[in-house]
Image (cartoon, rainbow over all chains, first blue to last red; front, side):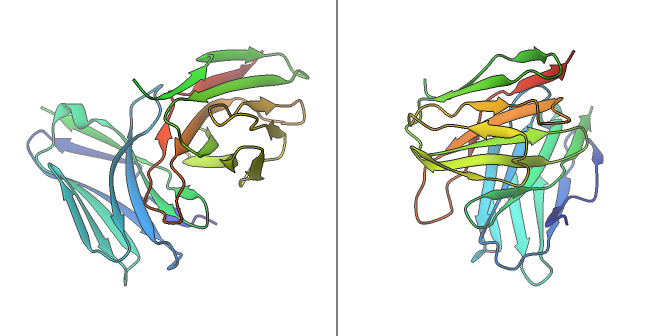
Length: 110
Length: 115
């Protein structure tokens, strides 16, 4: 039973354009959501987070949107850069632990 | 420079052998975690510890064991009971508060393979 879902395994975007990565969840009790970025053979690095009491959080080129009624969050990257090419995981905070989605591989091409 | 160190980066095991993966952090974090990543899957929680001398099973604890004798260290033992141990193992840590807004910081992982 996948409580956090990333339905798009991959996304390809041209440099300078917007990248939108999506994440759906099923448990309305999740109180905090995070996005991580992962390069091959490395550990994930924390990117941005959002509390369930907010609907938007912005940090430079990265913005996370939360739609609680739809149980959906998205990560916007504007403008996309080649160095953004990586796997992005969304995660939701449940009781004492994080629950991760399966990841979306973003490729930013010139 | 604070961080999480996992060693070794690559590890090979013969069938029937136990093997221990090391995880050390100097971030002064109370909580530590072990995850497993398989191709095409997200990170799945094996064990976690919120405080020294205490730990809890995650979603896939069978065939694994841990100890938390020191705040800085959280070694994971993959036992012979783990039937499919080949995977990428990630250790993480976070500050522990009554609130949830503390992101986990990850090490660079250990890739375990069966010979």
